[in-house]
Image (cartoon, rainbow, N blue to C red; front, side, top):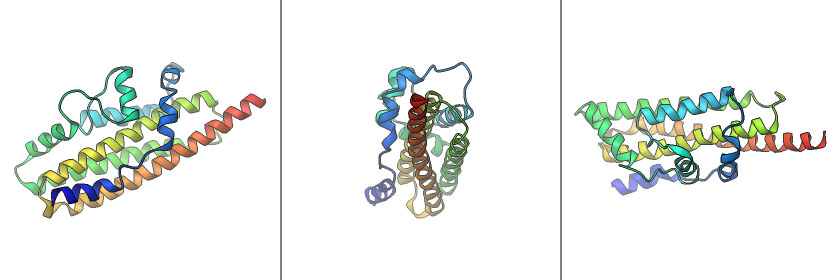
Amino acid sequence: MRSVLVSILLMTGLTGCATVSMVASEATVETNLSASESSLKKVSDAYTDLAERKLWIAKNTGLLGFARVLMDGTSGEGESPEGTYLKLVTSQSAASSEQISFVQADIESAAHGLDVATMEVDKLFGAGISAKALRADLLSYESALVTAKKARRTFVSTLSDLEIDEINSASYALTELDQSIDKARNAADKLADYAADRKLEESLS
């Protein structure tokens, strides 16, 4: 039963993001563009910081760790984030219903945080921002999107280890997170296209 649940919950969360590989190749170029950070970068970085603090994902340090986040979502160091988060959840209460509620609240928080970042993306279109700055924003946003996908895997793994009869409400929250991830993926693709158009405009001016 556990393997069936994991397969179902993972089914919609393992699709790739077209812009991740493109942005990853520019990581070393775009990380130090300016001293002032855009609102999107601040929100995206805060989202990943939150995910690390709440143990939804493993903490990655350094450029190598950052590249691993973009390419495959793993740090390759220490205990798996799923195992660490499961320990946190089960330490909250012995009651499975309260454990499920804890995970549900985190899933809802993850979805909301990503939605906030997506709203920041919408503000960039038509704002006259340079292509170089847009690519830097895209890099940060893609990192937040990968964080959301990694957090989803942690939530799915944790739910599969808890009482199956009581996960309906958390499964609904997981559907909401999937929708947030889909919206973010579409927004990232649009932002990548917009940045490319801006680069062309700048080259012709």
